[in-house]
Length: 78
Image (cartoon, rainbow, N blue to C red; front, side):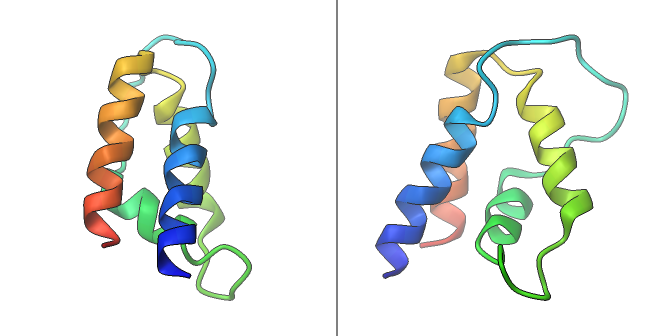
């Protein structure tokens, strides 16, 4: 089951944004913070503001950067 959620999180992180946009000046959430929060989706521990920050940050990344970030996220939830 944990493997299923890991794959789901990886796909989510890669696909949550299809293009690049301008960088923001706010601090980017870590890949681990995004992955751990995504694993809490559907529970009372899920934090929508973290999710929004993760999505906004992912929108600033290139496809290669999103894949690299997704791989880092998978390492956090193993």
